[in-house]
Image: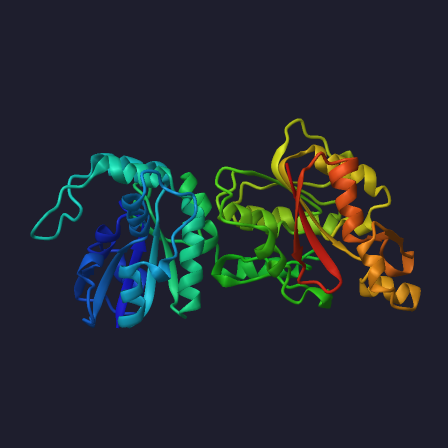
Length: 417
């Protein structure tokens, strides 16, 4: 069985392999006796009892060599030749994913002499090239993509912080702490019982938030969102969030914000009026060492001098009596895009409130349907109604994109400047 050691250049992969901490962090697996570097993985050679050393930025090196400017989009690991051979030909029992502060990666790259110190034929390290690759890569999103590939292939993994600030140099961490680690923060991993206690908070429901140890919050009685909202967030969030600012109106536990943070977003603000959800969100943000700023208030009372790159109003607008004022304010705060998820005239609650199905053609007209308080709704909207409001009335947007919501009878519209 092999152990995959992965991380960007200068993260400390070779140092970890030869460190005294490796045995305890690999436990209960034994420490492999051999070391195989990515460039040595070729053909159909099968390795055993080996550390397999993989630079997660190698696919970016390939992109760099094929283009004068590195593209924003991240590479597909499954298509990268070295990783493809590792996944297809080698038995991987565990992956160790190393994370170091961004500033340390750059400093180590500045001082590095050789690609690998421990090989016989040392090759000089191209400092400027690798520093350029580090600077131009959305590292949080790169890690997220790598985690998803490992999960797709059923490879268990541990996340380990690598930092000169640590007396022991390497410390067990967690996937959720990658953004904090990259910022130079090194949270102490709480014990599992502390994390599990969060699940008992009164407001711990509606969203399935990823916590340390792979623990997720429960959705509670909200059977119409069995996925805990992650399917919706996968639709509306992309990997081009590096250094972007995000406002989530009606953020509940803050899951969209934490996901955006793991995709490289810089400034994260959530508005949540529900007291119990707000308190739980604050607790979760603290546990995750998230930079998310979550505020308890009605959105119409929300005060902010700056605008945001992206504003999200997900599954909220049908609870708002003054939806025109609400959308006008959300539009005003959106620099690049406003994303809205809402129930259409096909919504099942709206149908039950009226006692019949409406003709499909009505959903293609610019109509607003007034619901009843018994249905826990104020209004529902045809897609054309929301489009006309945001494109012509309050938004000042000039493009709209439609996405099917995972929730039955609902739709997602993204408006762009």
